[in-house]
Image (cartoon, rainbow, N blue to C red; front, side):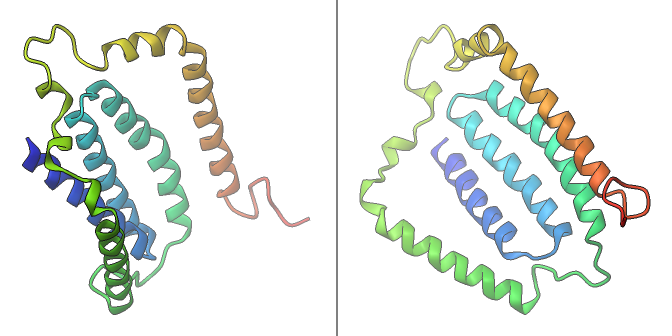
Length: 173
């Protein structure tokens, strides 16, 4: 399990570097989907499968739709890919920065701290996130409804702003 978690974390860092270094929204959207999947995989490995599922569905269902409409407005005829020279230079600079920061904090990391939550108890009767699910729906139900309403309102605002100058809310007076 430690090897899987290490693979997920390395993939997460590489995906974040790919998103940060790419100026084209098309490839950034693909990188964000990969990063969201790998981040949810890390959450599942550490004992939060329900939280991981909720985050993945909210991200892909809400935020990626808004990002797709925004990327449609910034359509480029020749977008830069991950193999172009400026993007590779940015990726190299970011990876050097990540390596320097990881070397700086290397002394506090040990392999025993990467053990997932399900492997710590031998005869566990319930998972680590079951209490959090009940608490989210009992005490946090109002906040869940407000968050869904804010995401819907944000979607409509972005759609109205990106509709164009002649038909949208921001037209020339």
